[in-house]
Length: 89
Image (cartoon, rainbow, N blue to C red):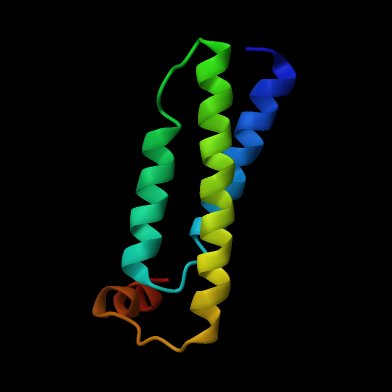
């Protein structure tokens, strides 16, 4: 993989993680983070497959960004797990 495309993939990965952390719902947030991490663990050499996966990742990024915007419109109650995380910080 060329250095520029490697950096592009890493940049996309970081963006997906950053946006996933903004999801207001604990369950959706942890699910999205797990899915992003699992998707980027694959080793793919075929350029066509890489491009297809990158397109899918861009679509997922747009979806996560929309969900973050929608989630901000509605107040949600924190779960017990989230309340415990705050105490331990």
